[in-house]
Image 1 (tube, rainbow, N blue to C red):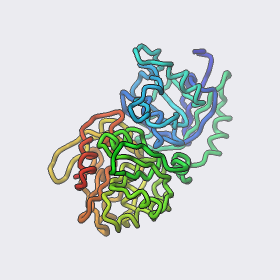
Image 2: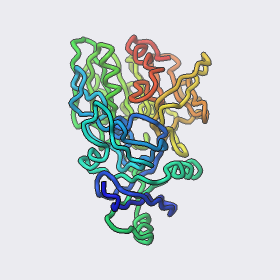
Image 3: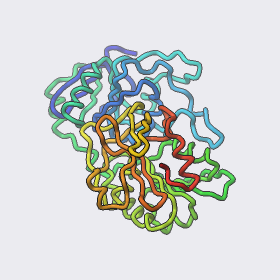
Length: 374
């Protein structure tokens, strides 16, 4: 790597962090968020929920086990170490880039990002960035790379032109254009309203023995019911759930059926909105593999993988047929909801982990058995 390549990460409040670039020699802008995970950067970088975001890692050393090949797949053709078919983040900010030493490494993190045209910055105090975001809230930012010094006035001028990606319907960019089928020699079919699903969710559903169909997020109720689904999943995805207006309308109709439904992450927020509840933007979001969630009925705590910037308002649930079942121990936000009459549930975390703890994978088993997931 050429240490002469310079880079800056600039936040919308004018704060500038200077370092060295790696990956693609490009500029990128987006919402700057942080993740405290120590492992799982191939999964993280390919998670569609990070679409239009610049991700800052608090763990200081990244790239040490390289990048495994996409050709390592399961029996359904899904890559084992990725959550989609390409990098979804806009930019990547780390403290130290390590050369890989691992049997499965096919290429370096830097080479992978260069090939997929994603810029990165290394050599900055990522924990200082994180402290600033935790104090002031999530901010828009700019990641610039250059072979020459990057002037402060140039950065300031470009910061003034930033626009918030959350004002757009980001799910439209990551949903499939047509249904995707995974045949599992089963009469039971799970239809997934794909708002930017992670492959880990698909793997978990297929492991139950059912066949899976991923459909575009704007599919109508009639189009969904043509597949005669035994279960319906509303997936994770990027951005503000309130922008998914057609999905919310569709789910509102699905709530009138007797089909068991599971909402995951963004899917839980859409489920709540369809039921008449409200959502709001968190100050800095939840992005890590170590968030503790408390089951308010049993008192049991689960360690979970999370990646979201919005949450369901607890007060707004009072006017719906849903009740809160899980809360985040750190900030008391709602992490799980369940319908008081039907087998319809939602969780704010990722029970498939990918990466992360396996504490709550049993939720898929309970869901596939037709019982409420709690």
